[in-house]
Image 1 (cartoon, rainbow, N blue to C red):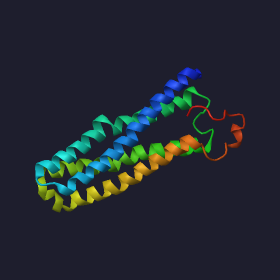
Image 2: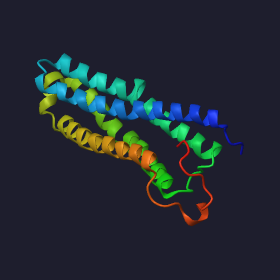
Image 3: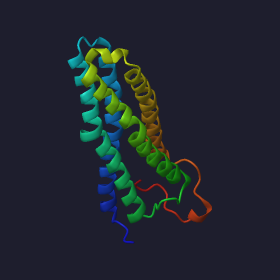
Image 4: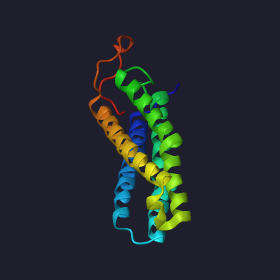
Length: 177
């Protein structure tokens, strides 16, 4: 495979950081929006908050950020000397990133959609609905955990902990990952 030039790697790093910022920042916004529900006075307001959360997550910031992080990480692995599994920290990032995307797709997203749908149908009565309340609790708890994992991945990228695997003795140090 062709390796990107140093300038190309800087562009890739910029897009990777932009995507990761969207993913983490968007997820923090989702958590913040949950706290607007405490003072909600009518069903339309509750539904509006849930719809906003869903829209920011699925259409504007979080999902595009997650996909962008995955794709730019893939480009890093293919078009640089970093590879996929040359270093333990890279392996950890790949496993955690794919796990976070899958968990968001199969758990966080459906819980969030359920809250939006239930509040759209029941209005303020959704706050007494067990499915709504369970989905809200699970989404907030595991969404907060996911944001924490993403923040840890950010610092793993900065500090690049753990020694290189034995086969990577000649791997570049530092670099742009």
